[in-house]
Amino acid sequence: MRCGVLASLCLAMAAPLSAAPAATRAVATVEGDVTGVWQGGIAVFRGVPYAAAPEGALRWRPPQAAPHRAGVLDAAPFGSVCPQSQRASPYLAGLPMGEDCLKLNVYAPGGAFEGGERVPVMVWIHGGSFRWGAGSWPGAEPFALVHRGVIVVTINYRLGRLGLFAHPALSASMPDEPVANYALMDQIAALRWVRDNIAAFGGDPARVTIFGQSAGGISVTTLMAVPSARSLFRGAIAQSGASRIEGDRPLRGTHRPFKSLEADGLEMAASFDITNDAEAPAKLRALPVADLLAYSAKEIPNSMNPVVDGRVLPDDISRIFRSGRQQPVPFLTGTTSFEASLLGSYRFRLEDTLRGEDPAAVRRVYAGFEDRALVNAWFEDSLFRGPARFLAGEMARVGQGAWLYDFGYVDAGGRGRVPGAAHSDDVAYVFGDLGMRSRWHGDAPPTAEDRRMAEVVTRYWVNFAKHGDPNGPGLPKWPRYERRTDELLDLSAQIIVHEPQRKAQLEWLDEGYEKALRLP
Image (cartoon, rainbow, N blue to C red; front, side, top):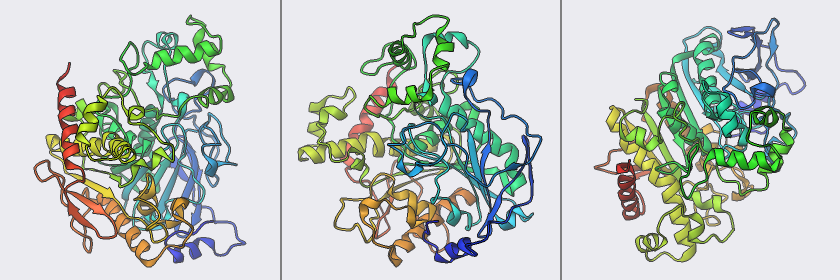
């Protein structure tokens, strides 16, 4: 076990080392009874199915109901993680992997679980470009969050081309079913499971907040735009949700410069000598998972964001937010100060990061930036900071508050060695477990200042889940985001409120958004 920010919690979880964790009472769920284990005063249930295994004839179909169990499920161990490259997910190495992966994990405070007052629920949607990751990460479980009086649920969902895929013959064979966005459909199925079952664990199904980072952040804003997810949550937190105002690619047809999802499916099928005919769906579903992973490993691993399919996701999320059709819930969103860490050490040219934009116009607006700084700034602003600011500004249309942040805190071990808070650096502070910090900051143990920052961030997030507002006693005031004031909270060593950096460039992006949203 790896200890995080709360040493006393680690001791409670570890003692006695030689004894197996005690089993919880059996909990009745819609699918059957389940038992978990006690860890440090928290009732933990791992690997609980929320849908049937999406394999065989159920591959590339909407998630189906999990089968009913006659016996009692032992939910002490994690379930399988969804198929993905183990090379890209070394922290999951050794865990079972397979298509029977639509599982979730429940962490409930002992008092609520044993019959006390029902508590708010936070549902974590992991990141990983919709290609990697899992809700079952050994050594990075949300114990510190749960000790603040919430239930936390972490989920798996289909990844890669198992989670986002379309092919004309496959679509034709399922005229009455939604297609393509299987990862998104899985997330909705998990939220329905929470609605139907969480009260049995001590949670309040009327107070569910979804939160996620990176692909999980994109999932959060997308779920806000999905009609079938309406009423499944009452608050939303999107951390570093990379997206474009106007989606990357369509389900079908031509839409330069992006290849449609069905065109991608045709190419993949052709690589396996599968022609576009009535036999294609069965042949595609019979492909070994290893072959699908090997095919995907040959390409540049861009994020596989949800697409507008006309049924689950009826329109681009920016248009849904602009027209006031998003779910009217409190919204908290933001980015880290060095999202460009995702670019690594590779020397990208500006043209490598453009998607149809005029490079001359970008260089003019970012005049004075040397080449590497220009690429980094454009990448961060166009994919992260601009969209987060835009979506936060649109929440006034549905009469709900929005809170915008920039996470710039660099721990003591990284200060002076790194240019800012990298993509994903905020996760450890949100979870309140500094054992999750990225190792690129060094192996220095957390300082008292690091721990204070973790406490501040965790309290903001939990306050938001409990009250629909991150503010609370003893915390720096975080104002609601409004377009006229354009202020965000800077979560750095000194927590202050200010206008966003590179405001002139962000306002130029706003002009582009307005032009795009006026187009038919």
